[in-house]
Length: 192
Image (cartoon, rainbow, N blue to C red; front, side, top):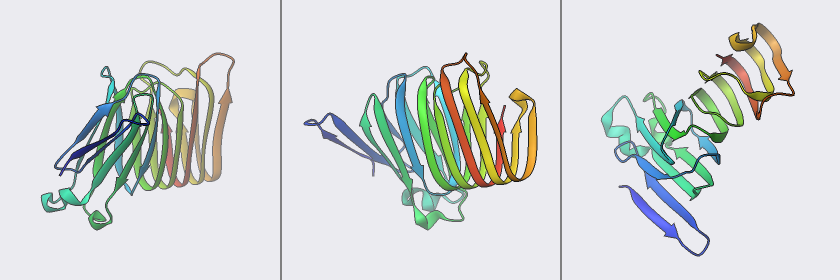
């Protein structure tokens, strides 16, 4: 069951839900968001709303209540924790909608992280899986650092395609406002 707990003394709010009860909370443009998740497929999409909205799906509906979505923070800084060990093989897919200008930091054991239409700093770490970052409005990064220990770094936006062991791509420019860091131990990084 979804719940909202407000801690007014420190200005923190906590929202808890599951796949049957998506969560939504205030998150303003240019906020920082830290995401820690169990293995899953995660899609982060930029929107015009000044909120974070998190929903999820699993293969079998009876497992929907086993996924816990927990957001805590303020409109300027938030932490999203996604857990649920009982849904290991149920193809968990998470959709996170955030303001278009949001700074993201991800840590996840395995899975897939897709970020589309979000402008801001990005720091994404996976042990195994795939990271896809799309920037349809153009790339405005001051620095880009993408690396894999075993796998591929495909940065078509920069004309780079590398595969094998210990592959990386770095780029620094005087122009640009944001930083992008993506690392996968074993897997693939796509910068589109």
